[in-house]
Image (tube, rainbow, N blue to C red; front, side, top):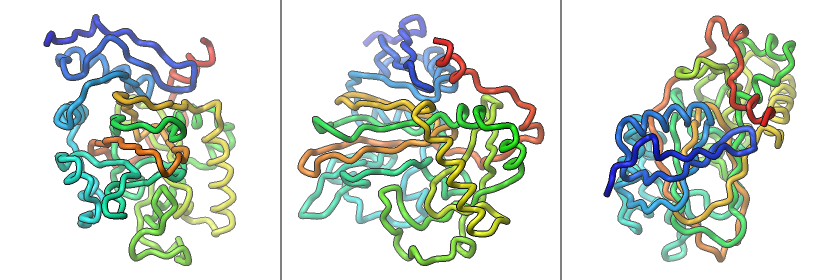
Length: 315
């Protein structure tokens, strides 16, 4: 197979607030210079779509390693996930997590089933949430299961200046009480006082370590608490920030097809998924790399905006 070069890249930006489709590239045959170009495009567009890829599980592991150090779901949760049998069912390496509604002997083999998955950033309940995150479409139902992505640079840049000043220095505790399918985690309870539940605290203003631009960091709505506020004031502020951040004008919607690879910057985005029919099979392979501990730069309020959303508005 011929090695693809950066000259082969045909980039088609979406008309949404983020995202671009990369055409003319077989990801199994890219050289280092081509990956460096793709990485720059990824940082700019926050999300890249590659369609019609003929990928093996090993190819996905090779791709994720280009973005950084792979981290497994078991390592992130710091517990044995033996109840997830998909890696054995599909003969997959440990770097891959299976997002599926497939069952074996009446029990789910993977994660997230066929219901709605609410807005979130992956592993925001960790001290260092993941950075690059990717999904490969293996089996796709005829209807439903769309994935929505929100541009958190754009949401930050569009905040009123008074709100930017208000949240500067504030942090949100991210407790691991429910998962993104709204199921209570083992050992947790919805009756827990969020102020007493262990969990990392991340700044609302998160400065990207590579682009040097600000993002609004919300993580997950449920199990979140703005440190130092009363529960009522915390809920009111979170409601306001979430309603602002997930407006349709800041989002891109992905319609899945077999062979799609979507790679997004988990540090700068939120995402959610529509439900789909339970009698339809949906299988996606997921992988991710280690991230950093979010921080607010000392000069955060003086930093310029990220250019992607402004370009979408001008198109």
